[in-house]
Figure 1 (cartoon, helix red, strand yellow):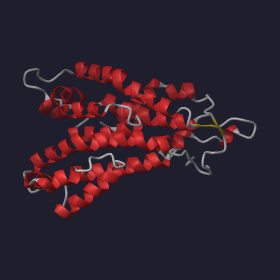
Figure 2 (spheres, one colour):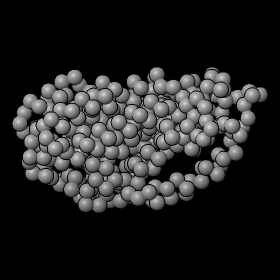
Figure 3 (spheres, one colour):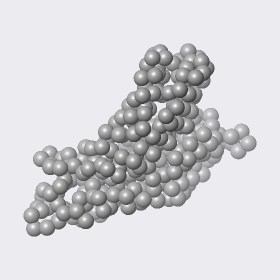
Length: 274
C-alpha cells in the first residue's frame, strides 16, 4: 500500500472540488471526516501484512471514536478467511484457508467495499453523531469567514488535542509491542504505559498475565524463535491492546475540548455552540 495509491483514490473522487465553496461552520466535524476518509482509503487499498492491518486498526479506533464493536477488530485480526481478503500478495497467500484457496482480486476488492459500507461508514456516522452538538459552530456578525479554522490544516484529530495525544500514545505503545522488549523490566514498564495509552481501559490484571508464564515472557522479550515471537506479539496486540484502545477513544471524546491548531488559531471558543 503506497501513499500515492491512497491519494490517487481520493483525488479520483473529485469530492474536494465539489465541496470547496461550502462554508464550513463546524470545522471540527470536517476535520474528523478528513481523518475518516484517510482511514477508509487505506482499508479499500488493502494491506501488505497483518502487522500493518493492526496498525491501521489503531488508527481506525481513533477515526471512528471507538464506534466499531471491540469484537469486530478481534474477529478480523484472527480470521484466516478475512485476512486473506484484506491482505495482499504473499501475506494473503499465507492466511488463505487451504480449503478455500486464495480469493481473486475482484472478490477481495468487493469484500472490502461491502465491509466498508456495512460497518466502517456507519461507524463513522455514529462518530459524527457523537460530536455534532459539541462541535463549535462559527456563526454571527463577529465571525469573519477568513478567520474560520481550516479543517484541512488541523494538527489534532477532530480539533481535539486530547484525541491526538491518545492517538500518539497508542501508536507508540503498539509500535513498541510489535518491536519487542529488551528485558523483563522494560516489559513491566511498558505494561504500565499501555494502561495510560488505553485510558485505563486495559484489564487491570494485564501486567500480571504477561508476567505469569515464562513462555509468555520469552515470546515478548524475544527469547524464542523470531517469527513465532513476532506472531505472538501481534496476537497480544489484537486481543488486548486494540479493544482497549477502541474503548479509550469512546471514553476520551466525551470530555475532549476543541482547539484550533492552525496558524493564529485560538481555542475554538469564539463562535456559538449549538
